[in-house]
Structures are given as C-alpha cells and as structure tokens.
Image (cartoon, rainbow, N blue to C red; front, side, top):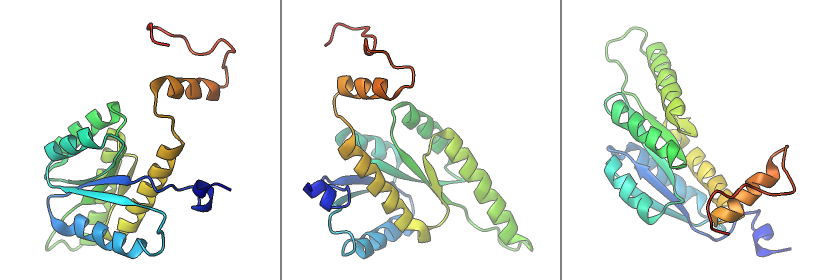
Length: 187
C-alpha cells in the first residue's frame, strides 16, 4: 500500500484555495473551518489565498494555476462576477460561488424572498460556470471538502497536455486504436 493510498487517496501536495471576498464573512468562515479540519485531516495541506477583488484572483491564478477559487457573488457585484466566471470556465478554472445576499429589511415575507433571490443567484452563477454554489458561510466546511476533492483529482491528473489528451481519448466510448489525431507537429 502506497502512502497515497494510506492517506485515503489524498497526497501531501498542497491544495491552493483562493477566496475572493470583499467582506470578511466568507474568509473568516473558511479560516475557522480550516482550523477545525486540520486535526481531523492531517494528510491535507491547504494554502489559503485571501483576496478582495477579481483582478487579484487572476494574479494569484497566474502563480497557482491549479487552484480552486471561492468567489463571493452578490447582487452588487453580479455583472462583473458573471463576466469573470465566463472567462474562468473557458480557462477551466474551477470556481465555487459563495453567495452573499443581504436580507430585505421590513419585508413581511423576508425569508421567502431571500430564499428565492438566493436560488436565482445560485442558478445564474452555476450557469456562468461555477462548479457549485454555497449559500452561507456556515457551509465553509463544504468548500474545504470540494477543495480536497479537487486536490485529489489533481494528484491523479496527468500534467502534460499529451498525456491528458491520451487519457481523454482512452475514456471515449468510440476510441480507436490509432489514438488521438495530432494537428500539430509535437509528439
């Protein structure tokens, strides 16, 4: 049995997690969840990158291109976030939408309206490219679980494009013994 298997499939490869939040709500919750998870999962190594703006996320992604991004999305920053999520989807950046909706004061049906607004926002964020959405900082542990699974995938994913294309080709039901078609001269 390898060390990788003894660690439950996880390796000691650091898992980069970028949390973009303009308010401390989500970042504080993620830090708290990390502190709680560390003794339970000593085989996992998280590197938390906290940023406040989308431009900073892109800069951190240049340094850690295999990171998982937790992006706070609210009604006030929705347009910019949807545009960025569209870009991230094309770049194959995994993003979890961290929803942030302020309650409507003085609304008799506040709870129902908040739930409806949250569901609508979640649908928009997933449609734009987020792999998942979380509606409350109380779900920060779920973000760590998603990050851990992402890290587990990374340790099993080949790094080179050639190896990746070969692996994808093998998984296709109509695969050919000839292998994938090469359109460029690289071997």
